[in-house]
Image (cartoon, rainbow, N blue to C red; front, top):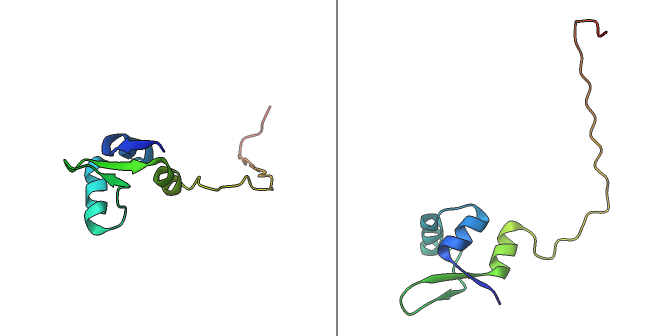
Length: 76
């Protein structure tokens, strides 16, 4: 199991280490492991779950974009 330090984990999910500390205190996102020295470590599973990629299947659909541009000027 891959473990990430608070800084590495924060960079991957787009938040600061301080935000992760606050979430830990509030119980919103607890680290997977805390060392004896108090260093927080987060698991790859937590990262995937946070980013919404755990167990995600490719949707069976096609996205089609449509754009119409109108102008008062005559196009040449």
